[in-house]
Image (cartoon, rainbow, N blue to C red):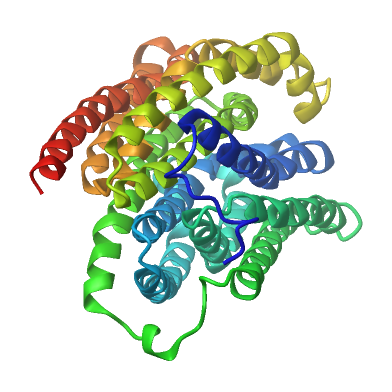
Length: 451
């Protein structure tokens, strides 16, 4: 296998290994977020504020499906990471191919089902009537392109599972540049509106997925096509489902809370929808690196669990938290200094009421970033250990937190409650994940000592 592109996370100083493995993930997820951020900027400045609000009102539904796809694909990579840590190359490939069959099934079901349900779901979350047609068109294109999202996320998860976090980033960078170019071309010269913005995203994701597959099958010797390893295996499918699907459902349960909150935001009117959309897009640019460190923790915990190195898992927790705290300080400082220019960059200078709401959102939520950073470390460690079913309950915590924020916004505190809804969701989920990680590590330490 190519040692230059594969990293064994069971060796070396944990903080150094996690940090070096995280850097391409951080850069990759930031560029991935630029898919939707480019939509936001170009739609907001080149079409209209109503078009921006229409794109924004779909965000919770998109999060529902994209979260399921991302969570499931990360989960499908965990048995591969554990097999890689255990030096079982045959199981690496068996899990890989059975994951492919699961991804095909998931892609077809989600693409057809969510495209048909898009407009009824938008009505369910009280999308303003004047935004409904644009919102439906935008999200239906994204839903139809779910196979492209699955292709990228699963192929990237496989590469990360065997220790290659660099090439998914390189290929995502290429497709991100393409996405920005296509956004502009489809929206400005071709006048394709929100359809063009969504279509550009789908094309770009598909290309990044194809590039991942090309690298995996041509450059990494471990990933081979052997006829006897391609067939459906009930044993491997069962384990993939037990780890992958709960992670997808955990992301989706959390997203249901976002849908409830989106309904509350929609009830506050188009101006605050646009304000929250703007603030949330910028917020995601700053918190996605924390999620990338979390993805690194899942691979790190998976490989070390496979190698039966629970001591390194515990060291990794401390290392991951240290990285997150340092990053949160930097992110808070950047938002404090540049929040107004960032909001103006998205909206332009003319929409003062919307800009004021976006600045308020960023100011309040950035103070609580460390909660999110810690959640990413503990939740992904729990998943990397193979206990993704337990993580569903953390998603329920997020559901409760976001739902409470939405209810308080409508009944009592208005937009301020919306600003605090996500941090409340993070806190409830974090409390649970800290408890479960400690319980699992104690249990597994005793098991390994007696074997």
